[in-house]
Image 1 (cartoon, rainbow over the protein chains, first blue to last red):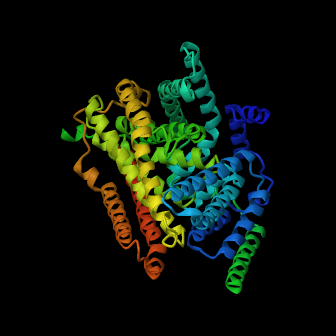
Image 2 (image 1 turned 90 degrees about the vertical axis):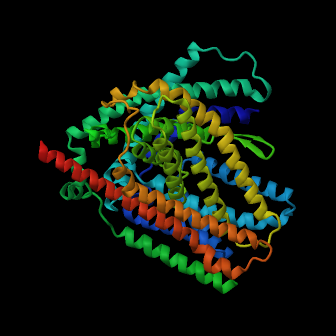
Image 3 (image 1 turned 60 degrees about the vertical axis):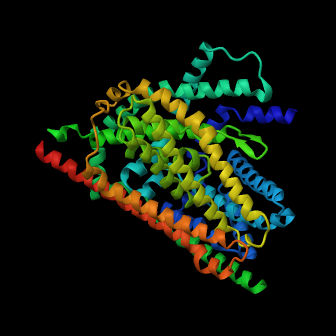
Length: 273
Length: 290
């Protein structure tokens, strides 16, 4: 019971908010964070696609080990790991349940397990890369790949505006709760309470939409006074903006190391089977 | 004179719509990611997303910018920040979701007509979920090697996806897309536009054919035909369920879906770039006038 209480205390909105802000701004002294964001994105493109097409179990296991090591090195927030594990286990468990109903039996457990490994490799790769990248650096990396300025701007804008938005949402939500009347009984499976809160959640967006509209106008106007949309089309400005991204000796080292590890994994995979 | 009636926004107004849609939908996405779902046997009652936000904005403003903004907001807030970024898989979601929202937006001519809004919302959702379901099934097909060897696995995946489709459409779709949109659109219409410094969308406003046929139309056409190819590919494999030839899988299945998705994504990116350039030239024309 204490455990449940502990979990409930941890999973309130304040905790989530602070965890997210920590993810966005903290822990920048890790090895992955010191790499050039372009290197990380190229590295990630490999591990985001290739595992889907690998059916060799040894190779997959090698990949998983690498990802776990990198995730530990990136010092990822426990909340994110819990969300990931819950998602993976839930999906696989449900698939298994249904395939048992269809008479698949436990035989379907093994292929599903390897699919889980695959998904875990891909998810861990993205977690390791994207949590160790500063939003500023990530948006600059996108810009350097030629992504339109609006899109790369919105990444760093999103990270910055989030605390304000969450706070404002909380205020609106609480004022709705103050004015409204919560149901006296919970109903079966708490459905009364749940539907009450969900309704409030939806209603809270009405003032929020209006407020955000005002804010987005202010934002765009402020940006335009600084020549925002002009600077995106100007090559000179882009060069200046991206000047702080530099390659160090770590970048080729990291890529060469990964390539060596992958070749080793494939060699091991063919050697054993 | 007729040209005046065309619904047009300036570059900064488009950016405002984009930012608005991105931040709001992104925020809602963080909540829906954290709301637990209720499992009733095989039916999962979950709050998939608050689609009413992009839908409302697509109907009230420029559908394309609101749709793309919402998809991007989902990726940034709901995936990147929570560390759930699926990487390449997100491209497919990006395309299908933007397409669905966009279709819902262009179907509405008069935001005060409830019937029109309702039909538009449901058709946008159907487009999005149907495409998503097809791609999901395809993914498991590619990812699981011994799919044909294990009895019941293939059927169960189709059943799960079918149930998820119906759940998304009937539970989430009606409760969190249709009803709130019907509530919000008439209330916000005429109120929110002045806040962004623009006129409300008029009943007589329309998109010129020229505007519809250019890049956007091409993308939609190509994406739809790509999906059609995938669908065909899937239906073909379904018929030969019992005697699945493994080499067919090897030479076709592995890369085929990804190539189709990749082509669609590349075209979408090119189009966005083209449109950005178009806006740029429009802006420089304006500058010349000034």
